[in-house]
Structure formats: C-alpha cells, structure tokens
Amino acid sequence: MGDYRKLWSDLKMDLEKHDVLCSVLPELYSNVYLSQENRPDGMNYFNFVVSEVHGLRIEELDNHKKQGGKVLGTFCVYVPDEVILAANAIGVGLCGGSQFWIEDGEKVLPRNLCPLIKAFVGAKISATCPYFQSCDMLVGETTCDGKKKAWEILNDYVPVHVMELPQKKREKNIEDWKLEIKDFINVVEELTGNKITFENLMNAVKICNNKRQALKRLYNLRKNMPSPISGLDSLLISQIAFYDDPLRFTQKVNELCDELEGKIKSLKPNNKKRIMITGTPMAIPNWKMHSIIESLNAEIVVEETCTGTRYFENFVREDAQNIEELIDNIARRYMGVNCSCFTPNTGRVEDITKYAKEYNVDGVIYYNLSFCQTYSIEYKKVEDALRKENIPLLFVETDYSEEDSGQIKTRVEAFLEMI
Amino acid sequence: MIEKNYILFPSYNHGLALESLLKQNKIQYIISPTPRQLSVCCGISIMYNKKDEDLIKKLIDENKIDILGFYTLER
Ligand code: SF4
Ligand code: SF4
Image 1: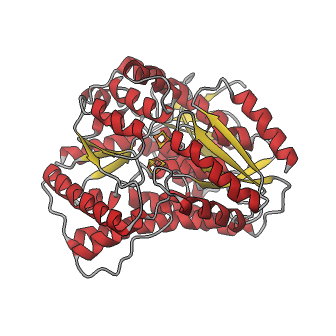
Image 2: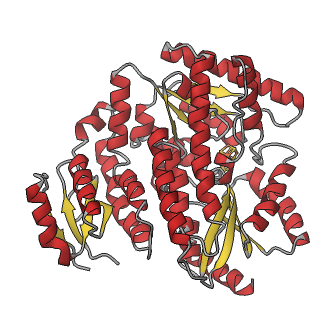
Image 3: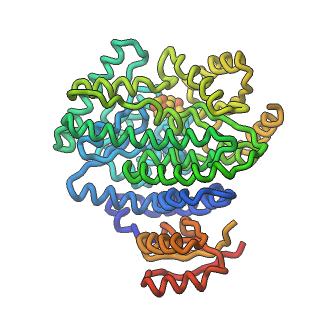
C-alpha cells in the first residue's frame, strides 16, 4: 500500500482534499465490484489497477517524465492516440466521472452543464487528480459547445491544444481532419522533441490496433448467452483502457479472454434480461447505471458509447506505404466514430440496430448525461429506428449524484418487467 | 464470497509477489483496495479465506515476502 505522499506533493496536489477523495474509493469499489458473484480470476489485474490508480500508474508517469518523456491528457476518443505514442509520449484519458469534483467545477462553470465537463474542470482547478497534475499538455477538441468553451478556462491552468473537429462527414471534412492531425503531429513533435516518422507511427498504429482487437474479442465473448462477464466488469476494463499502459493492458485483456473462452462452455442459461446501453460516456468511477441495472434481473451485454464500442470499433488500416497514406488511414478510422456532435449522424442509429441483433438484446437503455444536448436530441432518431424493429427502449437522463438512484431503479425495474 | 480477511503490504510489488504464489498454489484470493479502516495509505491488499491462513503464512516465510500484517474486518 505504498506511500505516495511525496510524489503527490511534488505534483503540487491539494493533499488534504485528495485524501477525502481517496477515502471513498475502497468502500465504493468493494460494494460495487468485489461483491459480485463468480467474477473471473482475470479481473484481479483490474482490481490491482484500480487499487493503485493514484499510485503505481502515477509513479510510472513520473519515471517517464524524469527520463524526459511527456504526458498528454485527452478528453475524447477522436484524439488520435497513435500520434502521442509515436512521439514516445504517454496519453491519458481525463474525463471525470466523480461527483466529488462537481462542486469545484461549478465555481467557474454554469451549473446547467454536463457533469463530465464540470467534473474534469473541477478536478484540475482543485488540484486533486494526479493524472491532471502529471500532464504537460491537454488536448481538447471542438465537439460539443460545453467542451469547446471549457478549454479556454483550463488553458489558464495548463497549456491546451485544441483540435478542430469537423461537424459533418463529407470528403472535404475528412481532408480537414487530416490537416488537423498534421498540426497535432507538429505540436507533439515540438513538445516532445521527437520526430514522428513513418516507422514509429506505424508501430503506434499496430499497438493501438492490437488494443482494439483485444477489446473487440472481449465484446464478442459477451455475445454468448449468458455473457461470461458482467457489464460492470466490462465497463471497468473500458475505463481503464484510457490510462493504463497499452501493451500491458492488451496482454491482460487477452489473458482474461482466454479464461472466459474456457468458462463459456460450462455456463448455464440464466433468465436475466440482456440490455444494451447507448449514449454518453461513463468516465471512471461512474458505475451508477451499471450497478443499478445489474442489481436487478438483468445483464448489460454491450455499450454503444465512447467507453464501449466506439472506442475500439474500426481499425486503422496498416497497408500504408508512406506517412502521408498512414495519416490518411488514421483520419479515416477516426472519422468513422459515430458521435452525436456530427450532423447528420445516421451511422450511430445503424450501429445500435446492428448491435441489438448481434448481441441479442432484450432492450436498450439510452443513457444521457444531464444537459448533454446533442445526445438528448438524437434520442428521437434512435427511438424511431428501434420502434420499427420492435426493440424496447428506455430513456434515462441523470448526473453523478446518487439522489435519483432509487427513482431510476424503479423505472428500470418496470422496464425489465415489461420486456 | 470471499471472507473479509486482508493482507497488507509495504508496497505493491510484495503484493504481486504473493499473488503469483497464491496462484501457483491454487489458493483463492482477491486483490482489493486497502480498506480505510485498516490504513490511511491507499494501494493494494489481498483478501483471503481464514482456512488458508496457515498455508499463506508458510508461503510468506519461505519466500521472504514483506507484509505489514494480517487483518480481519467485522461485517
Ligand atoms: S461522445 Fe463524442 S465528444 Fe464525447 S468522447 Fe465520444 S466522440 Fe468525443
Ligand atoms: S456528454 Fe455531451 S455535453 Fe458532455 S462532454 Fe460529451 S458531448 Fe459534451
């Protein structure tokens, strides 16, 4: 249980306040995660990562920095990890999933804003997140309005590079995105002092593709009836993917999949309802919906979210002959992510109906973080499409507080009974 | 369900060293965040069942693993 106080104070953290945050995690994690029955042994690695979330991984970032390496924080699955990795830098996903940071976020932001944004701004300005404190640079993007404007505030605390994300998906938008990736390459080269070459970029592409492949393998196993792994555990793995060492993470997910492959042969059918979650991302430690749903007679078998399929679907093609072609392949892979910030965003509706069949779901729960407009407006399109397919759908809009948990539970319970 | 008995370590590598021994010897365990009631430092601990305690103690002695102690939480 190492003592990381020296490390934290070197990172200029508010130790007293950070201690309050640390004090809630063990119990929360034990109640939500360790109380599950029949968990795979391979989850011990992920227990380990969570237990050391503000320890070992922060120490690794620190060692990397001592050797002259850089750390970049990101907030969206559109920011290409490949570029960061190619320059021998480390990328960490910084979306905030804890109610703990909301109060501080609201000191500088309007209250009627998505909790994810309030939480990550609060985490930075309160100096209680060691990942934020380790970052040499943050990389923002112009997705939703809330994030777009939040970068201006964060930039007063730490340098922020903002990538301009297109709003549509025409060929000329893909060209624009390519130019943005090239700009990003220049920024990262300047920050790290390392040149990005065809070779190191290709190597990074392979590392990221292997990671995507491992997650895809895990999700494919969830298509089994019953799924050999809970939605809670799968969600945790997706969340950890955003900040763990990519090579070690990939290896551990594959080891877990080996175990699950052995396990499915002996699984007996259960009568749990199979549920898909679709909607906004769930940043660690936001386990609220999953723990409510899985405390009832249901298992979550797929998440069509950025902490789910959108993170790993589509691979970067590795057939490029030079860096120009490789950047083109990278740009096209990312432009294939179906986020509601785009108009139109028909690809997402198609994905949802496709997954509903592939994963054999009994119903879909549309998870919408409060005040996230693009996703809440897009609900209508999803509703129309699922009605045509006769797939039951429930809309839940919520934030990180526990106040409405009882009410959500009642609604989910009624939904499960109906389907 | 595993019982609420915990082994605490001075640092995570000792915990991981014990983990691989438990695995080899097919002893049931769970890696867990250290409960606040046991220590204010965060980091890993290992949960185990009382019936395996003597065997675990033997493994710890034989392999010179550093631990901070064995603890049990009342439910
Ligand atoms: S939901 Fe959209 S803006 Fe948010 S992480 Fe995903 S792609 Fe980015
Ligand atoms: S959940 Fe919606 S409002 Fe919140 S950051 Fe993502 S796109 Fe923006």
